[in-house]
Length: 513
Image 1: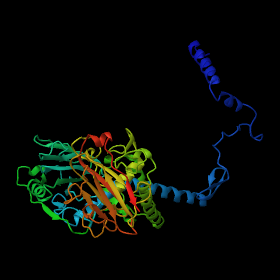
Image 2: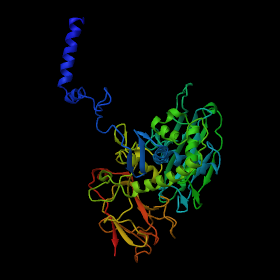
Image 3: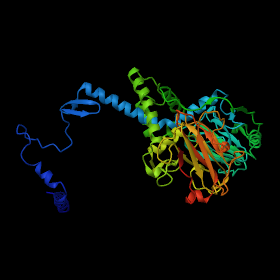
Image 4: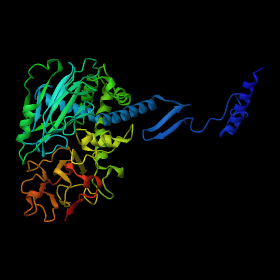
């Protein structure tokens, strides 16, 4: 016999269960057998049982009492592998972009020693995601496999460190801890347990390979003062050699040279992703993304050797992944991702530099949009920093929502008092390469640094786009190509409060008929 307290508990529990929703259904299962041939048979709950045939976008799927036949299983596995591959492609856009950039730089010289820079600015020969021709780019690829490195950053630059997965690690320069004065950054590799000396800005890197880009600024239209600071003060050396003269760096001028850093959208995409997975600690990325990569045969410590069936799936998934990224970028569905109501100016950073819908929740469309279109991630490009950093607005459509057509003529009106402390610019890009549009103009842009820029009496500026310039407006005109589309970015360097409060707003791009 049960103890009185346990008996009371059992009676109370039975009463509670009887009063819960669904109790009547449970009681119904105590009725006569659903199949008279078998004593212990109950009605199947709705939605549990598979029918013998299911019509889907994959065709007819056949089952024997819930067991898929061999042909149906083959269709389902092909579909599953393809779905996972497409999602893996979108997740991998950041890493493959980084590996492609590094691969291009390795043709110029080794990591830790090579500094590409654009001494005469980036021009339209370069295939480089949404680069601008208003600042001087230079950068370094660093490899921490042999231990901590010291990176000495020059003064008066604006930059950051991103890891191989294209995540922000730390700002450098004006928005970093050195505040634009320059300084020594001690970069520690993953899992480092050694001593950390004083006198450095200490940075813990989650990956062995990291990218350190920065921009220096023109002085009265001249890039040379900034270049001289970069060449004079930039140093890279092992922490173990901190008391020795720093080795000479190899500066490579890329201006006026064709140079591609943009990732491929074919089967070779997966080979670049495999390189990142093999080289970096698994702890540096979350298990979901690594799980997607593993599901298509990319797993740390194992060879990437897909069979012919999987190669075909991966090649198609790369094509569909690229198409999906383009659809996400050019047909953004979420209206919250636009700056203003009834506007086609989009936010490059949706959900901040981490691309989150809410803390801990990734905005998948924002993530793929940004990494398909651009490079470089830092809070300084999206947080409210009045008089510091930079802000961006992007569009590929005119005021009516139509794509921007290189055969047509357009205008963009920028109202008076453009809210910048430093400068602004409008740069045009190819929808294909997301790099500067290629025309007869070396620099496809107009901005406050443009010599001879026409400013209206009220301080506003009109920018013109089309195959030929309007008479007398050549300095405010950017050439476009019939038969090709384009997109543009409005940049504001050291933006002021009216930009953030939206009391100043750029016009929409208007077609001129």
